[in-house]
Length: 228
Image (cartoon, rainbow, N blue to C red; front, side, top):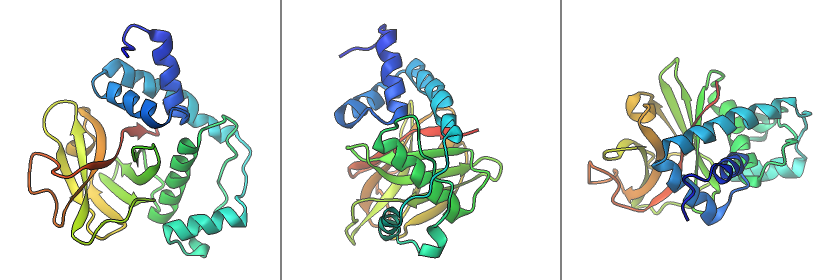
């Protein structure tokens, strides 16, 4: 399928991608097209600018105790740290992927205490399920990686974060090891204009033995989204 030249289809797919209703194989194909199509990435950014701010106009709601218990269990949170009341009732009809990503972002903000975060990347698996959250503070030149919900990692393996440029070899940004979170320096290697995606690969303990890229499977990936 070739979507170049079909502006109506490109616009519709970009809107569905941002809204979270583009799922499974269709979402993976769209991300593949974005990798080599700067105009399509620009169209996605336009839709992010239109849709993401709209949740601010929705009526605030408090999740039920049942929902919070599930969140606390999955994220290993203490109840007194995770009960906050800025969860929005999204009037946009967002898909479950978008809701989960925004929920993860809220949890990450609370845990990291980073009110000046201006970029975020939600790394998802092959089924578009959020697994890791990466938050960046450009003023402080810092970025925080938080494991939200991912498959267990064998003792002899580790997760490694990469920046995938539009041209050239992937850049290693850090190894999670057995940690659920990681703080890193934010620089051009991680968030430069040439970075198309962030990705997580499964590697031997200590990280990939190949300095030019992953040696194990890429499990999760996602683009940066500018919030400000």
